[in-house]
Length: 402
Ligand SMILES: Nc1ncnc2c1ncn2[C@@H]1O[C@H](COP(=O)(O)OP(=O)(O)O)[C@@H](O)[C@H]1O
Ligand SMILES: CC(=O)OP(=O)(O)O
Ligand SMILES: [Mg+2]
Image (cartoon, rainbow, N blue to C red; front, side):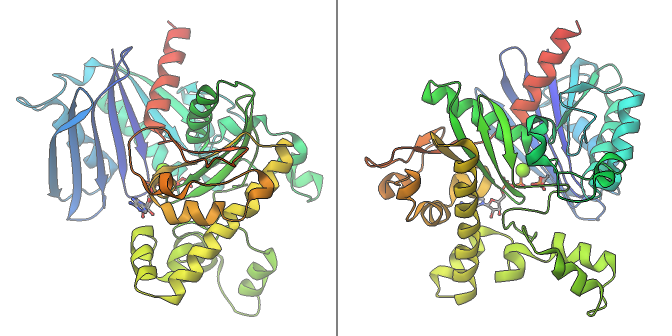
């Protein structure tokens, strides 16, 4: 059977097609700059897991529907297509960022599920509307397929109440559901399972560190999330590409009051203009690495601040876990940026971490163990694969409902 995975974002769509049960990736792609006359599609077809053919298209795409229609055209093109008919797709797995408290697990998409995802727009205004749009379009384009939602928040529903509640009046939780939810759950779950298997310890005490555009950390034990650094929305915790991470709420009050910012301006500031972009002028870690190498003081501060925040949460979550068996770096920055890893692990002997700098500099695919001889806890790099995890959870659900 074929499982198609869609990660529909505000201006981009990532997708991947798998053959099941072989878990074989058939093709993947990225549609960017949706809404512009010069949108791009990068479509890669795999043969035996090594990329064989990559196509790049530049074309006008007015909206997500136009983008996904073009993707279906690429999937079914003759010759060169990977399927003949959209009806060959048995299931479409959707990344949905916010599942609130309603969804602690992967779910078949029904009218009620869609209504709940719509209700959650207010809690994840940047993500859920785009995810929803992807579902609506996929329902039309893959009408025969089962549509499945895999929620970023679901994995973190195991957090204890003292970890997920804010010290606000109880009514704000009970009536408005204001609490910590946590995100990137699919990625934390995927790499935590790989780490536990590597350590041959299902009960391993793990800190998973997802450093992509959005960044978050989780404390995981026995495959369950005990705490995570993102909160009510995907803004708190670590410094990110364009998001500030932890911030004293008084700053917001000062912006909204004496400085005269509107709510929209504050939202744009925190979501799009802060983080590494605000500190050092770029949200791409590769640019900041180059600036640092050229002696840029802003880039140096940005790197230190980014790493310091990671160290802060390693300390916090070692306390949460009452010990530490491994930390796991993952996602674009975590998998590729040796300097971030080195700074995050420096002077952490107290926590049992000692990085082997030579191993840290080496590049190879798959799981890497960067621990030095004196490290009591393992330091791992594990490439994340949210799409594969979404496909797995979709397949499991379909089997259960067969
Ligand atoms: N070789 C590299 N060195 C440092 N950073 C990298 C490298 N490759 C990618 N990145 C960073 O990874 C980030 C994107 O990570 P990714 O996990 O793809 O994010 P997302 O899924 O949120 O779009 C970007 O900030 C990019 O700079
Ligand atoms: C929830 C979140 O922050 O997702 P992303 O990193 O894809 O923006
Ligand atoms: Mg990501």
